[in-house]
Image (cartoon, rainbow, N blue to C red; front, side):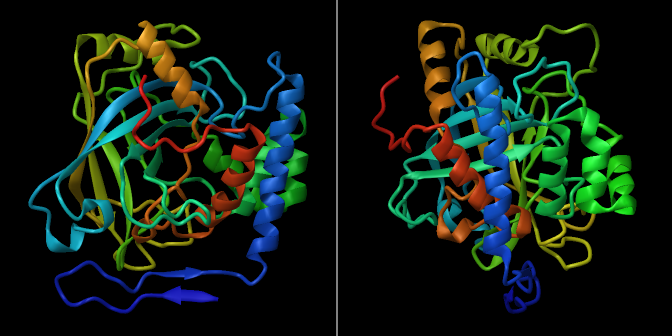
Length: 352
């Protein structure tokens, strides 16, 4: 089944994006989610705390509070959902490593940022949570993924759980040629950063934006620094804390609009939406104000944030996630959240 929007008037972003939804997706994506939950349960059995972590992004580098400000005088086509008018929202922000295991920050890994806005009106997507007052945005250091779709992703995650069996499991799941093609992509490693306060994060996957489709990114206003020297096991969190004791950390929230299926595809997550094809537009700003994460309040706040669930489907209907990778996450995140008994969604009345 395909879902397609109509062509927009000249001068506006294209609206003829489409999703290609296979008839067996629910069955397949449920199976993928169950496989990831099995890994989550297996790690819990081996964990010293005996409780389930997140299936992925298990290690939080930091949990801090922030403000998300929608900018004034946006072009009309960018005034969608919560971006319809200038407003500032309370935000809970979690920085993390991407692996399902808690490991040294020096180890090659995906790095992520997850933002939960509180006080967001409007109908939400998840059944039973239509009246929730939250909106989540999740992003990683890469502007695209090495995986075309969820089958490749889940196969790699499951195979990597036992490095000694990685290659035979990949070949069994993907075939000989595709396995080596994917390993070649993965051999490039992950982007290296010196600080989460100076990094740029990308959605890497699309979301609906009213009649349009976009990728989004968070670009740090502070300049990046070279990566050097031996680092401690938790140096990303320590380094961010040092930044925040001195002053705020600020990111520009930017979107780039779908152009066409070749340069900005909805379903193929391995294709980068290049800025030359789809220029960025800054529509909001995330400010993490000066604070001390090591203070009593900071420790309590971080603990609260660790208990929350961050999910791209915690979203207004106007900002629905798009593409197979996002649709698969709708199944996986729900099971992962249930497995670790995540806290209920905040509503802005919590006092920390």
